[in-house]
Length: 499
Image 1 (cartoon, rainbow, N blue to C red):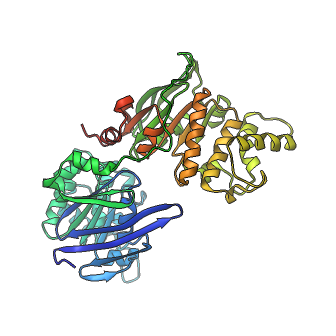
Image 2 (cartoon, rainbow, N blue to C red):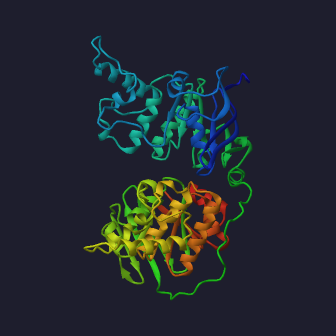
Image 3 (cartoon, helix red, strand yellow):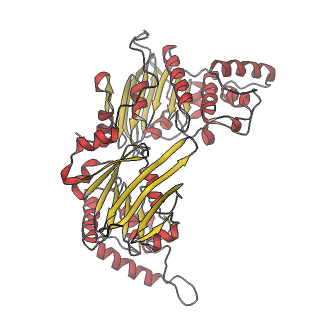
Protein backbone atom coordinates (compact mmCIF):
# COMPACT_ATOMS: atom_id res chain seq x y z
CA UNK A 1 0.00 0.00 0.00
CA UNK A 2 1.19 3.51 -0.82
CA UNK A 3 2.01 5.12 2.55
CA UNK A 4 0.27 8.33 1.45
CA UNK A 5 -3.03 6.42 1.13
CA UNK A 6 -5.42 5.61 3.97
CA UNK A 7 -7.60 3.48 1.65
CA UNK A 8 -7.00 1.46 -1.50
CA UNK A 9 -9.58 -0.59 -3.39
CA UNK A 10 -8.42 -3.01 -6.09
CA UNK A 11 -10.58 -4.68 -8.78
CA UNK A 12 -13.87 -4.39 -6.91
CA UNK A 13 -16.85 -6.11 -8.58
CA UNK A 14 -20.52 -6.21 -7.67
CA UNK A 15 -23.41 -7.51 -9.77
CA UNK A 16 -27.13 -7.97 -9.33
CA UNK A 17 -29.45 -9.99 -11.60
CA UNK A 18 -29.16 -8.35 -15.00
CA UNK A 19 -26.99 -5.46 -13.75
CA UNK A 20 -23.21 -5.10 -13.36
CA UNK A 21 -23.16 -2.42 -10.66
CA UNK A 22 -19.35 -2.28 -10.35
CA UNK A 23 -16.74 -3.71 -12.69
CA UNK A 24 -13.03 -3.96 -11.83
CA UNK A 25 -13.02 -0.68 -9.90
CA UNK A 26 -9.73 0.65 -8.50
CA UNK A 27 -9.76 3.56 -6.07
CA UNK A 28 -7.36 5.22 -3.63
CA UNK A 29 -7.90 7.86 -0.95
CA UNK A 30 -5.01 9.85 0.54
CA UNK A 31 -4.56 10.93 4.13
CA UNK A 32 -6.10 14.37 4.70
CA UNK A 33 -7.61 14.80 1.23
CA UNK A 34 -11.13 15.50 0.01
CA UNK A 35 -11.83 13.37 -3.05
CA UNK A 36 -14.99 13.84 -5.08
CA UNK A 37 -16.82 10.87 -6.58
CA UNK A 38 -19.02 11.87 -9.53
CA UNK A 39 -21.10 10.15 -12.20
CA UNK A 40 -24.57 10.02 -13.62
CA UNK A 41 -27.44 8.22 -11.88
CA UNK A 42 -26.65 4.50 -11.90
CA UNK A 43 -22.91 4.99 -12.38
CA UNK A 44 -22.15 2.88 -9.29
CA UNK A 45 -21.21 5.61 -6.77
CA UNK A 46 -23.72 4.59 -4.09
CA UNK A 47 -22.90 0.89 -4.43
CA UNK A 48 -19.20 1.64 -4.02
CA UNK A 49 -19.55 3.75 -0.87
CA UNK A 50 -21.98 1.23 0.67
CA UNK A 51 -19.31 -1.45 0.13
CA UNK A 52 -16.76 0.76 1.90
CA UNK A 53 -19.26 1.40 4.72
CA UNK A 54 -19.87 -2.37 5.01
CA UNK A 55 -23.56 -2.31 4.06
CA UNK A 56 -23.00 -4.26 0.82
CA UNK A 57 -20.64 -7.20 0.30
CA UNK A 58 -18.68 -7.12 -2.98
CA UNK A 59 -18.50 -10.16 -5.26
CA UNK A 60 -14.72 -9.83 -5.45
CA UNK A 61 -11.90 -7.38 -4.90
CA UNK A 62 -9.58 -6.31 -2.11
CA UNK A 63 -9.36 -3.34 0.26
CA UNK A 64 -6.35 -2.05 2.12
CA UNK A 65 -7.19 0.21 5.03
CA UNK A 66 -4.50 1.69 7.25
CA UNK A 67 -2.07 -0.93 5.91
CA UNK A 68 -4.31 -3.97 6.58
CA UNK A 69 -5.97 -6.05 3.85
CA UNK A 70 -9.68 -6.94 3.76
CA UNK A 71 -11.90 -8.74 1.24
CA UNK A 72 -14.97 -7.01 2.67
CA UNK A 73 -16.19 -5.09 5.71
CA UNK A 74 -19.37 -5.28 7.77
CA UNK A 75 -20.99 -2.12 9.23
CA UNK A 76 -19.63 -2.60 12.76
CA UNK A 77 -16.09 -3.29 11.51
CA UNK A 78 -16.29 -0.27 9.22
CA UNK A 79 -17.28 1.99 12.14
CA UNK A 80 -14.55 0.55 14.37
CA UNK A 81 -12.01 1.31 11.64
CA UNK A 82 -13.13 4.94 11.64
CA UNK A 83 -15.40 5.05 8.58
CA UNK A 84 -18.45 7.29 9.06
CA UNK A 85 -21.15 8.04 6.47
CA UNK A 86 -23.52 10.98 6.20
CA UNK A 87 -26.28 9.76 3.87
CA UNK A 88 -28.34 11.95 1.57
CA UNK A 89 -31.46 11.09 3.59
CA UNK A 90 -31.15 11.92 7.29
CA UNK A 91 -31.07 8.81 9.47
CA UNK A 92 -32.41 10.46 12.61
CA UNK A 93 -35.16 9.71 15.13
CA UNK A 94 -37.63 12.60 15.13
CA UNK A 95 -38.97 12.10 18.67
CA UNK A 96 -35.55 12.09 20.35
CA UNK A 97 -33.43 15.07 21.32
CA UNK A 98 -30.46 16.35 19.32
CA UNK A 99 -28.08 14.88 21.94
CA UNK A 100 -29.75 11.46 21.89
CA UNK A 101 -29.59 11.35 18.09
CA UNK A 102 -25.90 12.26 18.06
CA UNK A 103 -24.97 9.54 20.57
CA UNK A 104 -27.74 7.08 19.67
CA UNK A 105 -25.40 4.09 19.36
CA UNK A 106 -23.14 5.12 22.23
CA UNK A 107 -25.40 6.70 24.89
CA UNK A 108 -23.80 7.39 28.31
CA UNK A 109 -25.50 5.27 30.98
CA UNK A 110 -25.69 4.99 34.74
CA UNK A 111 -24.46 1.93 36.62
CA UNK A 112 -28.05 0.62 36.52
CA UNK A 113 -28.19 0.86 32.74
CA UNK A 114 -30.37 3.98 32.43
CA UNK A 115 -29.53 6.69 29.91
CA UNK A 116 -27.63 9.54 31.53
CA UNK A 117 -29.30 12.36 29.61
CA UNK A 118 -27.46 15.22 31.32
CA UNK A 119 -24.09 13.70 30.43
CA UNK A 120 -25.33 13.09 26.89
CA UNK A 121 -26.40 16.74 26.51
CA UNK A 122 -23.09 18.00 27.93
CA UNK A 123 -21.08 15.86 25.49
CA UNK A 124 -23.28 16.92 22.56
CA UNK A 125 -23.01 20.61 23.47
CA UNK A 126 -19.21 20.34 23.49
CA UNK A 127 -19.15 18.48 20.16
CA UNK A 128 -21.50 20.97 18.49
CA UNK A 129 -19.42 23.85 19.82
CA UNK A 130 -16.22 22.28 18.47
CA UNK A 131 -17.88 21.81 15.07
CA UNK A 132 -19.24 25.37 15.01
CA UNK A 133 -22.89 24.25 14.93
CA UNK A 134 -25.13 26.52 17.03
CA UNK A 135 -28.07 24.22 17.89
CA UNK A 136 -29.18 23.47 21.50
CA UNK A 137 -28.63 19.74 22.06
CA UNK A 138 -31.64 19.42 24.36
CA UNK A 139 -34.05 20.27 21.52
CA UNK A 140 -36.22 17.60 19.90
CA UNK A 141 -35.60 16.84 16.24
CA UNK A 142 -39.22 17.75 15.44
CA UNK A 143 -38.44 21.37 16.39
CA UNK A 144 -35.57 21.72 13.91
CA UNK A 145 -35.50 22.98 10.34
CA UNK A 146 -34.35 20.66 7.50
CA UNK A 147 -31.00 22.53 7.41
CA UNK A 148 -30.48 22.02 11.16
CA UNK A 149 -31.33 18.31 10.83
CA UNK A 150 -28.69 17.88 8.13
CA UNK A 151 -26.11 19.57 10.37
CA UNK A 152 -27.05 17.18 13.20
CA UNK A 153 -26.51 14.24 10.79
CA UNK A 154 -23.02 15.62 10.14
CA UNK A 155 -22.38 16.07 13.88
CA UNK A 156 -23.51 12.49 14.49
CA UNK A 157 -20.72 11.25 12.21
CA UNK A 158 -18.21 13.02 14.49
CA UNK A 159 -19.57 11.45 17.71
CA UNK A 160 -17.00 8.72 17.09
CA UNK A 161 -13.52 9.54 15.85
CA UNK A 162 -13.77 9.54 12.05
CA UNK A 163 -10.73 8.71 9.95
CA UNK A 164 -12.69 8.49 6.69
CA UNK A 165 -15.85 10.58 6.30
CA UNK A 166 -18.21 9.74 3.42
CA UNK A 167 -20.51 12.64 2.49
CA UNK A 168 -23.36 11.69 0.11
CA UNK A 169 -24.96 14.83 -1.40
CA UNK A 170 -24.33 16.72 1.86
CA UNK A 171 -25.41 20.15 0.63
CA UNK A 172 -28.67 19.02 -1.02
CA UNK A 173 -30.74 20.31 1.92
CA UNK A 174 -28.33 22.98 3.20
CA UNK A 175 -28.65 26.72 2.74
CA UNK A 176 -25.61 28.96 2.16
CA UNK A 177 -24.87 29.31 5.90
CA UNK A 178 -25.16 25.53 6.44
CA UNK A 179 -22.90 24.88 3.46
CA UNK A 180 -20.27 27.28 4.85
CA UNK A 181 -20.40 25.51 8.24
CA UNK A 182 -19.94 22.13 6.52
CA UNK A 183 -17.02 23.32 4.38
CA UNK A 184 -15.35 24.87 7.43
CA UNK A 185 -15.67 21.54 9.31
CA UNK A 186 -14.23 19.62 6.36
CA UNK A 187 -11.27 21.98 5.98
CA UNK A 188 -10.44 21.94 9.71
CA UNK A 189 -10.65 18.18 10.12
CA UNK A 190 -8.85 17.25 6.90
CA UNK A 191 -6.12 19.60 8.15
CA UNK A 192 -5.87 17.22 11.13
CA UNK A 193 -5.53 14.17 8.85
CA UNK A 194 -9.13 13.02 8.30
CA UNK A 195 -9.95 11.94 4.72
CA UNK A 196 -13.24 12.65 2.93
CA UNK A 197 -15.07 10.98 0.03
CA UNK A 198 -17.40 13.65 -1.31
CA UNK A 199 -20.33 12.67 -3.56
CA UNK A 200 -22.18 15.54 -5.20
CA UNK A 201 -24.13 16.27 -8.35
CA UNK A 202 -23.18 19.93 -7.90
CA UNK A 203 -19.95 19.95 -9.86
CA UNK A 204 -19.21 23.55 -8.87
CA UNK A 205 -18.74 22.42 -5.25
CA UNK A 206 -15.95 20.07 -6.30
CA UNK A 207 -13.81 23.06 -7.27
CA UNK A 208 -14.54 24.73 -3.90
CA UNK A 209 -13.70 21.92 -1.49
CA UNK A 210 -12.05 18.92 -3.22
CA UNK A 211 -8.43 18.03 -3.95
CA UNK A 212 -9.08 15.24 -6.48
CA UNK A 213 -12.09 13.99 -8.42
CA UNK A 214 -12.85 10.44 -9.63
CA UNK A 215 -15.39 9.87 -12.41
CA UNK A 216 -17.56 6.74 -12.56
CA UNK A 217 -19.63 5.63 -15.56
CA UNK A 218 -21.67 2.45 -15.96
CA UNK A 219 -20.10 0.84 -12.90
CA UNK A 220 -16.52 1.53 -13.99
CA UNK A 221 -13.91 4.07 -12.99
CA UNK A 222 -13.18 6.39 -15.92
CA UNK A 223 -10.47 8.65 -14.50
CA UNK A 224 -9.07 10.45 -11.47
CA UNK A 225 -7.96 14.10 -11.77
CA UNK A 226 -6.29 16.63 -9.54
CA UNK A 227 -9.00 19.31 -9.30
CA UNK A 228 -6.65 22.20 -10.13
CA UNK A 229 -5.66 20.41 -13.35
CA UNK A 230 -9.16 19.80 -14.75
CA UNK A 231 -12.39 21.68 -15.51
CA UNK A 232 -16.16 21.17 -15.58
CA UNK A 233 -16.35 20.36 -19.29
CA UNK A 234 -13.75 17.58 -18.98
CA UNK A 235 -15.64 16.02 -16.06
CA UNK A 236 -19.01 16.25 -17.82
CA UNK A 237 -17.61 14.67 -21.00
CA UNK A 238 -16.12 11.79 -19.02
CA UNK A 239 -19.44 11.25 -17.24
CA UNK A 240 -21.11 10.97 -20.63
CA UNK A 241 -18.40 8.80 -22.18
CA UNK A 242 -18.70 7.46 -25.69
CA UNK A 243 -21.99 7.87 -27.47
CA UNK A 244 -24.45 5.16 -26.60
CA UNK A 245 -25.94 3.31 -29.56
CA UNK A 246 -29.67 3.94 -29.69
CA UNK A 247 -31.95 0.94 -29.50
CA UNK A 248 -34.61 3.01 -31.23
CA UNK A 249 -34.71 6.44 -32.77
CA UNK A 250 -37.95 8.35 -33.08
CA UNK A 251 -39.04 8.95 -36.64
CA UNK A 252 -38.51 12.48 -37.92
CA UNK A 253 -41.91 12.30 -39.66
CA UNK A 254 -44.44 14.10 -37.48
CA UNK A 255 -47.79 12.40 -36.93
CA UNK A 256 -50.45 15.00 -37.55
CA UNK A 257 -53.07 15.64 -34.87
CA UNK A 258 -55.20 18.75 -34.36
CA UNK A 259 -53.36 21.56 -32.53
CA UNK A 260 -55.96 21.52 -29.74
CA UNK A 261 -55.21 17.87 -28.93
CA UNK A 262 -52.78 18.55 -26.13
CA UNK A 263 -52.34 17.81 -22.45
CA UNK A 264 -51.65 20.93 -20.40
CA UNK A 265 -49.93 20.53 -17.04
CA UNK A 266 -50.49 23.89 -15.36
CA UNK A 267 -48.75 25.24 -12.24
CA UNK A 268 -48.31 22.00 -10.28
CA UNK A 269 -46.78 22.76 -6.93
CA UNK A 270 -46.27 21.42 -3.41
CA UNK A 271 -44.07 23.28 -0.98
CA UNK A 272 -40.57 21.87 -0.77
CA UNK A 273 -41.22 19.16 -3.38
CA UNK A 274 -42.48 20.51 -6.73
CA UNK A 275 -42.17 24.20 -7.58
CA UNK A 276 -44.79 25.60 -10.01
CA UNK A 277 -44.24 23.19 -12.91
CA UNK A 278 -46.03 23.75 -16.23
CA UNK A 279 -45.61 22.13 -19.65
CA UNK A 280 -47.63 20.82 -22.62
CA UNK A 281 -47.62 17.44 -24.35
CA UNK A 282 -48.97 17.11 -27.88
CA UNK A 283 -50.67 14.03 -29.25
CA UNK A 284 -48.19 12.10 -31.35
CA UNK A 285 -45.09 13.01 -29.33
CA UNK A 286 -43.25 11.45 -26.41
CA UNK A 287 -42.40 14.01 -23.73
CA UNK A 288 -39.53 13.09 -21.42
CA UNK A 289 -38.82 14.26 -17.88
CA UNK A 290 -35.17 14.10 -16.86
CA UNK A 291 -33.11 15.31 -13.93
CA UNK A 292 -31.32 13.84 -10.95
CA UNK A 293 -32.86 11.52 -8.39
CA UNK A 294 -34.60 13.78 -5.86
CA UNK A 295 -35.36 16.53 -8.40
CA UNK A 296 -39.12 15.96 -7.96
CA UNK A 297 -39.88 13.90 -11.09
CA UNK A 298 -41.75 11.00 -9.44
CA UNK A 299 -43.46 13.38 -7.01
CA UNK A 300 -44.76 15.40 -9.97
CA UNK A 301 -46.11 12.25 -11.66
CA UNK A 302 -47.89 11.17 -8.48
CA UNK A 303 -49.47 14.63 -8.12
CA UNK A 304 -50.67 14.61 -11.75
CA UNK A 305 -52.25 11.19 -11.11
CA UNK A 306 -53.94 12.47 -7.95
CA UNK A 307 -51.98 10.09 -5.73
CA UNK A 308 -50.27 12.84 -3.71
CA UNK A 309 -51.67 16.15 -2.47
CA UNK A 310 -50.78 19.39 -4.21
CA UNK A 311 -50.89 23.06 -3.21
CA UNK A 312 -51.83 24.05 -6.77
CA UNK A 313 -52.15 22.50 -10.20
CA UNK A 314 -54.58 21.93 -13.02
CA UNK A 315 -54.70 19.28 -15.76
CA UNK A 316 -56.37 20.12 -19.09
CA UNK A 317 -56.86 17.63 -21.93
CA UNK A 318 -58.12 18.91 -25.29
CA UNK A 319 -59.37 21.99 -23.44
CA UNK A 320 -61.29 20.00 -20.78
CA UNK A 321 -60.41 20.22 -17.10
CA UNK A 322 -59.63 16.64 -16.03
CA UNK A 323 -57.70 17.46 -12.84
CA UNK A 324 -58.01 14.23 -10.82
CA UNK A 325 -59.39 14.40 -7.29
CA UNK A 326 -57.63 11.11 -6.56
CA UNK A 327 -56.35 7.95 -8.28
CA UNK A 328 -59.83 6.49 -8.94
CA UNK A 329 -60.88 9.78 -10.52
CA UNK A 330 -57.68 9.78 -12.61
CA UNK A 331 -58.49 6.27 -13.87
CA UNK A 332 -62.04 7.30 -14.82
CA UNK A 333 -60.67 10.34 -16.68
CA UNK A 334 -58.23 8.23 -18.71
CA UNK A 335 -54.95 8.87 -16.86
CA UNK A 336 -52.61 5.93 -16.26
CA UNK A 337 -49.44 5.84 -14.15
CA UNK A 338 -46.88 3.07 -14.68
CA UNK A 339 -44.98 3.36 -11.40
CA UNK A 340 -41.24 2.91 -10.99
CA UNK A 341 -41.67 0.02 -8.54
CA UNK A 342 -43.82 -2.32 -10.61
CA UNK A 343 -43.68 -5.22 -8.13
CA UNK A 344 -44.95 -3.24 -5.14
CA UNK A 345 -47.14 -0.61 -6.81
CA UNK A 346 -47.98 -1.89 -10.29
CA UNK A 347 -48.74 -5.60 -9.98
CA UNK A 348 -50.28 -8.23 -7.76
CA UNK A 349 -47.43 -10.63 -8.41
CA UNK A 350 -49.03 -13.68 -6.78
CA UNK A 351 -52.11 -13.47 -9.05
CA UNK A 352 -52.50 -14.55 -12.71
CA UNK A 353 -51.70 -12.36 -15.70
CA UNK A 354 -55.32 -11.97 -16.81
CA UNK A 355 -56.39 -10.71 -13.37
CA UNK A 356 -53.59 -8.13 -13.30
CA UNK A 357 -54.49 -6.84 -16.77
CA UNK A 358 -58.19 -6.48 -15.97
CA UNK A 359 -57.69 -4.94 -12.52
CA UNK A 360 -57.93 -1.26 -13.49
CA UNK A 361 -60.84 -1.69 -15.90
CA UNK A 362 -62.83 -3.50 -13.21
CA UNK A 363 -62.23 -0.52 -10.91
CA UNK A 364 -63.18 1.86 -13.72
CA UNK A 365 -66.34 0.07 -14.86
CA UNK A 366 -67.95 -1.33 -11.76
CA UNK A 367 -70.70 -3.87 -12.25
CA UNK A 368 -72.65 -6.45 -10.35
CA UNK A 369 -71.07 -9.48 -12.00
CA UNK A 370 -67.84 -10.44 -13.78
CA UNK A 371 -67.74 -12.33 -17.07
CA UNK A 372 -64.65 -14.48 -16.53
CA UNK A 373 -64.53 -16.17 -19.98
CA UNK A 374 -64.82 -12.76 -21.65
CA UNK A 375 -62.20 -11.33 -19.30
CA UNK A 376 -59.73 -14.10 -20.17
CA UNK A 377 -60.34 -13.71 -23.91
CA UNK A 378 -59.97 -9.92 -23.98
CA UNK A 379 -56.92 -9.81 -21.71
CA UNK A 380 -55.38 -12.59 -23.83
CA UNK A 381 -55.86 -10.46 -26.92
CA UNK A 382 -54.03 -7.46 -25.48
CA UNK A 383 -51.33 -9.75 -24.04
CA UNK A 384 -50.71 -11.13 -27.54
CA UNK A 385 -50.62 -7.61 -28.95
CA UNK A 386 -47.87 -6.65 -26.50
CA UNK A 387 -46.06 -9.97 -27.01
CA UNK A 388 -46.11 -11.00 -23.35
CA UNK A 389 -44.13 -14.25 -23.32
CA UNK A 390 -46.10 -16.74 -21.23
CA UNK A 391 -47.42 -20.29 -21.66
CA UNK A 392 -50.87 -19.27 -20.35
CA UNK A 393 -52.84 -16.27 -19.11
CA UNK A 394 -53.29 -18.12 -15.81
CA UNK A 395 -49.52 -17.93 -15.22
CA UNK A 396 -48.66 -16.07 -11.98
CA UNK A 397 -46.99 -12.72 -12.68
CA UNK A 398 -44.17 -13.53 -10.24
CA UNK A 399 -42.94 -16.17 -12.70
CA UNK A 400 -42.47 -13.67 -15.56
CA UNK A 401 -39.24 -11.86 -16.44
CA UNK A 402 -38.89 -8.18 -15.59
CA UNK A 403 -39.57 -7.13 -19.17
CA UNK A 404 -42.74 -9.20 -19.40
CA UNK A 405 -43.91 -7.91 -16.03
CA UNK A 406 -43.55 -4.39 -17.39
CA UNK A 407 -45.62 -5.34 -20.43
CA UNK A 408 -48.36 -6.64 -18.12
CA UNK A 409 -48.38 -3.25 -16.34
CA UNK A 410 -48.74 -1.49 -19.70
CA UNK A 411 -51.43 -3.96 -20.80
CA UNK A 412 -53.39 -3.13 -17.65
CA UNK A 413 -53.58 0.56 -18.53
CA UNK A 414 -54.30 -0.02 -22.22
CA UNK A 415 -57.08 -2.46 -21.29
CA UNK A 416 -58.56 0.33 -19.15
CA UNK A 417 -58.56 2.54 -22.29
CA UNK A 418 -56.20 5.15 -20.79
CA UNK A 419 -55.54 8.10 -23.09
CA UNK A 420 -52.73 9.61 -20.99
CA UNK A 421 -49.86 7.33 -19.98
CA UNK A 422 -47.10 8.35 -17.57
CA UNK A 423 -44.14 5.94 -17.57
CA UNK A 424 -41.89 6.27 -14.50
CA UNK A 425 -38.51 4.57 -15.16
CA UNK A 426 -40.15 1.98 -17.49
CA UNK A 427 -36.96 0.08 -18.36
CA UNK A 428 -35.22 -0.21 -14.98
CA UNK A 429 -34.15 -3.78 -14.26
CA UNK A 430 -35.08 -5.27 -17.63
CA UNK A 431 -32.85 -6.71 -20.34
CA UNK A 432 -31.82 -4.94 -23.53
CA UNK A 433 -34.21 -6.90 -25.75
CA UNK A 434 -37.20 -6.08 -23.56
CA UNK A 435 -36.13 -2.43 -23.40
CA UNK A 436 -36.23 -2.25 -27.17
CA UNK A 437 -39.74 -3.74 -27.20
CA UNK A 438 -40.94 -1.22 -24.59
CA UNK A 439 -39.54 1.64 -26.71
CA UNK A 440 -41.34 0.34 -29.81
CA UNK A 441 -44.61 0.04 -27.86
CA UNK A 442 -44.29 3.61 -26.55
CA UNK A 443 -43.55 4.83 -30.06
CA UNK A 444 -46.66 3.07 -31.41
CA UNK A 445 -48.80 4.51 -28.61
CA UNK A 446 -47.71 8.04 -29.50
CA UNK A 447 -48.36 7.44 -33.21
CA UNK A 448 -51.86 6.22 -32.32
CA UNK A 449 -52.65 9.43 -30.48
CA UNK A 450 -51.96 8.56 -26.86
CA UNK A 451 -50.37 11.19 -24.64
CA UNK A 452 -47.04 9.68 -23.52
CA UNK A 453 -44.85 11.08 -20.72
CA UNK A 454 -41.64 9.25 -19.85
CA UNK A 455 -39.58 9.78 -16.69
CA UNK A 456 -36.08 8.35 -16.90
CA UNK A 457 -32.66 8.62 -15.23
CA UNK A 458 -31.08 7.18 -18.38
CA UNK A 459 -30.08 10.19 -20.49
CA UNK A 460 -29.26 8.24 -23.70
CA UNK A 461 -32.71 6.64 -23.36
CA UNK A 462 -34.41 10.05 -23.13
CA UNK A 463 -32.53 11.28 -26.20
CA UNK A 464 -33.39 8.18 -28.24
CA UNK A 465 -37.04 7.87 -27.29
CA UNK A 466 -38.34 11.40 -26.68
CA UNK A 467 -39.18 14.36 -28.90
CA UNK A 468 -38.73 16.89 -26.08
CA UNK A 469 -37.36 16.58 -22.55
CA UNK A 470 -38.11 18.78 -19.55
CA UNK A 471 -35.12 18.76 -17.19
CA UNK A 472 -36.05 19.10 -13.52
CA UNK A 473 -33.83 20.55 -10.82
CA UNK A 474 -34.88 21.28 -7.23
CA UNK A 475 -38.55 20.70 -8.11
CA UNK A 476 -38.60 23.06 -11.10
CA UNK A 477 -38.35 22.64 -14.86
CA UNK A 478 -34.89 24.08 -15.50
CA UNK A 479 -35.23 23.80 -19.29
CA UNK A 480 -37.18 22.02 -22.03
CA UNK A 481 -34.80 20.63 -24.65
CA UNK A 482 -35.61 19.55 -28.20
CA UNK A 483 -33.97 19.15 -31.58
CA UNK A 484 -30.26 19.90 -31.59
CA UNK A 485 -30.39 21.05 -27.95
CA UNK A 486 -31.33 17.55 -26.79
CA UNK A 487 -27.87 16.18 -25.98
CA UNK A 488 -26.40 14.27 -23.04
CA UNK A 489 -24.15 17.20 -22.24
CA UNK A 490 -27.09 19.61 -22.00
CA UNK A 491 -29.15 17.15 -19.96
CA UNK A 492 -26.34 16.83 -17.43
CA UNK A 493 -25.57 20.54 -17.34
CA UNK A 494 -29.18 21.60 -16.73
CA UNK A 495 -29.83 18.83 -14.19
CA UNK A 496 -26.70 19.89 -12.24
CA UNK A 497 -27.18 23.62 -12.63
CA UNK A 498 -24.06 24.20 -14.71
CA UNK A 499 -24.38 27.36 -16.76
